Image (cartoon, rainbow, N blue to C red; front, side, top):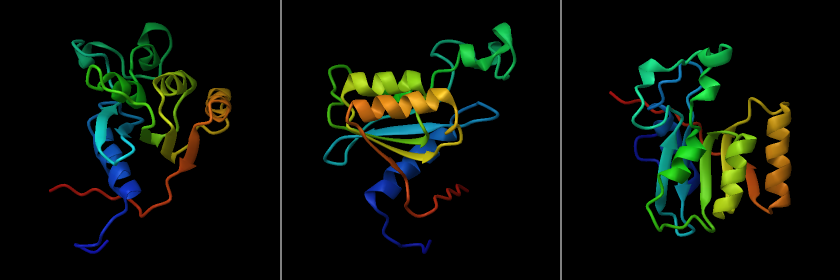
Length: 158
């Protein structure tokens, strides 16, 4: 990308999601999300991480079993973005940009908050039942779903 190229709104917001993902301490999957109002204003941002006020180094980041599994503790980027919304703020009609296709649990929150569109960068768990359930729920709720197809996002910070 040339130094002064103009980027689309999709590229801009997905770039913010990609940048947000870099905050995650997850050694395997870094995910970022940004929620945008219908008039292209950023409402909220999130990334996958441990719940607030918990020492992230005291909990497992492993894919292990039992209490040694990160899946018991990590809050997903979409969930954090929803929770990070200002008190009294509304997500009705908003668009969610996320670097990884939402899981079935985050999809429930997306539907409940009134988000109208989900734009995702990657769907590496496409064949999993939970992802298929997400797609089914999004379809039934009438939420527009689309894969990001803008310019490649390569963020270099020096």
